[in-house]
Image (cartoon, rainbow, N blue to C red; front, side):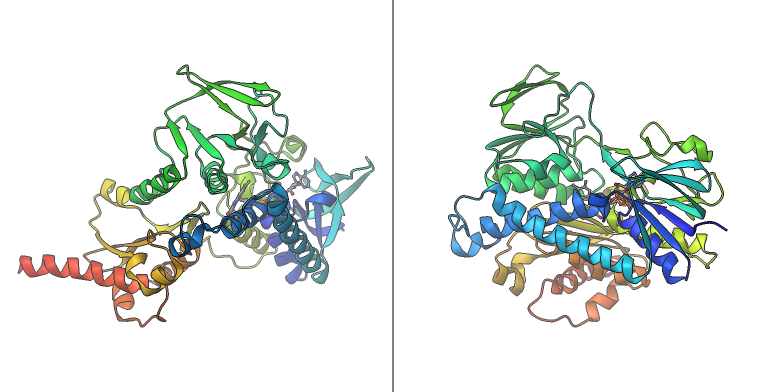
Amino acid sequence: MSDFDVLVLGSGPGGQKAAIAAAKLGRRVGLVERRDMIGGVCINTGTIPSKTLREAVVYLTGMSQRELYGQSYRVKEEITITDLTARTNHVVGREVDVIRSQLARNHVTVLPGMGRFLDAHTVAVTDGSGSERDVTAAKVVIATGTTPARPSSVDFDGQTIIDSDGILGLDRVPQSMIVVGAGVIGIEYASMFAALGTKVTVIEQRMRMLEFCDTEVVEALKYHLRDLAVTFRFGETVAAVRRYERGAVTVLESGKKIPAETVMYSAGRQGMTGNLDLPAAGLSADARGRITVDEYFRTAVPDIYAVGDVIGFPALAATSMEQGRLAAHHACGEPVRAMHALQPIGIYTIPEISYIGRTEDELTENRIPFEVGVSRYRELARGQIIGDSYGVLKLLVSPDDRSLLGVHVFGTGATELVHIGQAVMGCGGTVDYLVDAVFNYPTLAESYKVAALDAMNKIRQISLLDT
Ligand SMILES: Cc1cc2nc3c(=O)[nH]c(=O)nc-3n(C[C@H](O)[C@H](O)[C@H](O)COP(=O)(O)OP(=O)(O)OC[C@H]3O[C@@H](n4cnc5c(N)ncnc54)[C@H](O)[C@@H]3O)c2cc1C
């Protein structure tokens, strides 16, 4: 008999949920993780610290209140890195405690250390002190996540030249910063430091950023960031970064030289598979360290599953959790439904962005007709009360069957608001539901009704002219 029915490698959102789901099904579960990384990248270096930092920035800068109290409004004049990390450390500590307690309550055995395959059913666990223990399991779930990709030509030192993990180790708020890579993580941090008053330059190889999002929403974000003195250099490639005592100079292939106190690389992530000895289990990873899985998160080797960032797109905490639960259920022989196709995207920039479903560009490309219904926060009583005059919610509606094809939100509470649209879309509702629904007043949720009425008025105009 094996030591465990299910052995999970990694305690991020994917591993955690896989371990707890298997334990709830009465299985003997082991979870391998380094002592100081319970909760994974999500809790320790990624999602939770960055979102807490954002909250601290929004609060301390007083940004969200400036439309009401004036542009000079601040909660704290000199914001230090300690002000920011105090909140982050508090939240991370609490979250780790919650996870430890959940694992203990569900009788998941935590094995401190890093796992490495000896064969498909045996894993050697090496702890920090170098001692090794072999454990066997009927099923294994790999949830080892990713680390920031670091170009070998760049001399990272943790203060002047950092990756996104290095943000939490900065000893001061820099006066100037270069962000290399305009992906979600890069732009989120760019917006936070811009709000703190850092002069930020974003360098991106491509001509656009966040191209999977609604074009108007991205334009609105760029407008806001430029207003906070962010400079965008699109279509530019970094040729070299030179480090000096008091900063760095980033040299672009176009010949430009940009000085800054800190350079943050946010140029993709690499799967944490290098230390797993995958071939010993009969597995392999691609050049970016990712493992291929099927719709049930099974790898090419029976009894080994993989979930979370290590399997690649969409690489979100939100999706990793559900993948972990589904993989565990499949591994334990429970009936499993395929993962829901409709998944929200949340981008915690300042201001935030969220959407679900399709974009205007996608629909146009696929020749799917749509009508747009728009609601602006400044026309909502709640928008005036909270001082958000820029927020906007956009519904994309099919003129044929009035189904919702997409919901795009920019502004306060976007990542929460999007779930109303998700519920309507997921339950197969139409825009009629939103037209007829009564929402609490004054709320931002009311924007759904305003946008639905706008879309319906436009659809009605066409049918009036058509008859
Ligand atoms: C700065 C930043 C901000 C983010 N913001 C968001 C957000 O707002 N919303 C969102 O949904 N997602 C966000 N993400 C993405 C999110 O953090 C990841 O999608 C999520 O953490 C992936 O979960 P995972 O289960 O793959 O494991 P991870 O959280 O990646 O953790 C993997 C764990 O596996 C462990 N491990 C590695 N190798 C081994 C081994 N051999 N043996 C045992 N353990 C091992 C590691 O120590 C690590 O703790 C963000 C990421 C970053 C970096």
